[in-house]
Image (cartoon, rainbow, N blue to C red; front, side, top):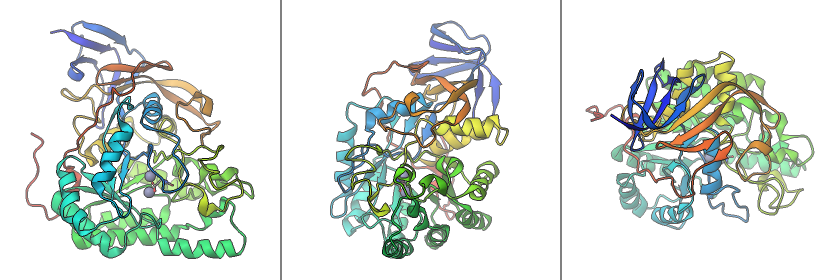
Amino acid sequence: MNFDLVIRNGTVATASDVFKADVGVRGGRIAALGDGLAAGREEIDAAGLLVLPGGVDGHVHFDQPTGDESVMADDFLTGTRSAAFGGTTTVLPFACQEKGKTLRAAVDDYHRRAAGKPLIDYAFHLIVTDPTEQVLGQELPALIREGYTSFKIYMTYDALKLNDRQILEVLDIARSEGAMVMMHAENADCIAWLTEKLERAGQTAPYFHGVSRPRVAEREATHRAISLAELVDVPILIVHVSGADAVEQIRWAQGRGLRIYAETCPQYLFLTADDLGGDGFEGAKCVCSPPPRDAANQKVIWDGLTGGAFQIFSSDHAPFRFDGPSGKKVHGEQAPFRCVPNGIPGVETRLPLLFSEGVMKGRMELTRFVELTAANPARMYGLHPRKGTIAVGADADIALWDPSRKVTITNGILHHNVDYTPYEGIEVTGWPVVTLSRGDVICRDGALLAEPGRGEFLPCGLPAPARPKGSPAPVLPF
Ligand code: URP
Ligand code: ZN
Ligand code: ZN
């Protein structure tokens, strides 16, 4: 029995186990796990390395139209390149419906944007901004059946937000079709009211972006999202949770037996409101929504990650350059915070940051790291067990980690197309040194070995976690 590739002598970790094994790869898939496997055409000696499932980043924004003159810095080539160097082998960006247009147009446009570019496999979430009768009755159900089985809805941002009635209608379709709904939970009116007050007082520096989006606005929307989901009896996933108040709502709902899932991101562990700066514009680099909070809230987020309130850890990579005409300064260097594009880069640093501060500092087991960063996102979005695990039959998407390599994060070592990283100067222990996608070595020791366009589009299955509580029968995985 010959293999295309054998990875020998490494320590394999999945979401449930850590064990010594050789990994045999054939036809892009894992064909065997064992001790002393037969020779492969190629061999990698992984002695001293961890053999982890490639990361699944369930929340990234690449080349997403923004609605103004700003342009995202990363497309499907530079975004997936950055992901791959950070040990991530599957990404899920968003095909965003423009109000007044169809969802199908957004999907077609997004496939055009991706064509010929991705280095790793990818699926699309949808963003539903205009739930017309046609969208609810025909387009959305049809797209879900074609493999677009998750979508995001917004409770904030004028161009994107839905009202409660619209949210209920969209949730109802998710329930009947079995899709996963991601909720951006911030109260739009609270934010608009505070923004106007701050502007009247001349408090428009990036720092005040955080002041305009307080935790209570996130808490209220989180509670409302949970209540609407309970009314419809459909699971939802609250994305990019930033602080204690929202976590409290999520724990409350989970304690009541509701299927409420939650995601958090590196910015809520490693940044605080101070990173949004003083009077200057530098803080624009960290303008994202919800905004980073403070050290006490960081601790609550850590506790939620280690203790189980959160199911997934994503980057929310939303890349805008700091300098230049189409990024953070699109409306000038003195622009009020309301005009600063929201979002920060992080697809490459997501895994090293959590590995170093989580696993190496003893906050979480390696199995939990794999669960949060690969296995659970794959389950949540209908890609498991093809993605997110090391098992016979799974795609050979693997990251070989050197757990003792010390790296100081600087923008110069990263592979995105953004001119800064919010994590400049942080030293981490542990780094992915080889990344494989479907058995191909695509990154090795800093060299890119993949051709643009080799990444495949993944139609997603119906995610088991999206099944309503009232669902009658289990869906068997075979
Ligand atoms: O500020 C953020 N998070 N920008 C990306 C868009 C979103 O809401 O996730
Ligand atoms: Zn969001
Ligand atoms: Zn996002």
